[in-house]
Length: 239
Image 1 (tube, one colour):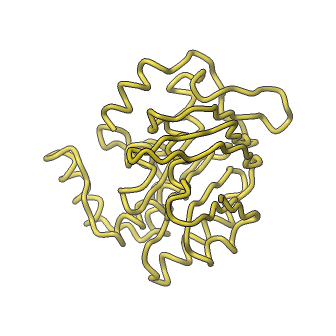
Image 2: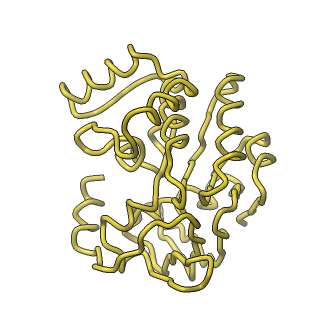
Image 3: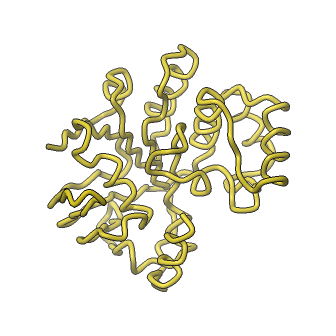
């Protein structure tokens, strides 16, 4: 992640793309990736329409998570382009032309496992452990729905203060991801990479709730879980 930050510092542009009430579409154009083992993934050309919930399905090794990593500029061997398009056609911008503020103003990512495409700092918290999205009642409602207890909050703050990192059980990480997604602002692009690895009914129900009810956001979900794919408006299969 540190290497990715250094690359982004060199590659960010200065264009703005302010978040509006209408979430943008996301287009991958001639996307291709070379993995450390030499395997090449691509070339991929597809678009996720603005405001839609789309599940991305594929066999292991096809590159589901790699396409999401491309959105966060975490794949140094990537070629091709990623565009954000206004729904009314009034503006389009390529990922690397955007300023850092604009990109992370519209793009929010959540990965319950902490080992997939989306690093933790692109989600609910900033690098100092502060809440990125809202303050006040929004946080309280999201924490209540996701069952984030005061003990979990205190433990998060303690770990960040002492080590700069947060480690927790898979179930707790899933709840943090749900809380962050519930607070995603209208007009944003919300990314989920394997949002729930276990089958706890509460977690499954809340993830389905996020997929179905965050209508004013573009939602992209990489998953192996049929219930999550069936909750989406569209399913995209990579091969």
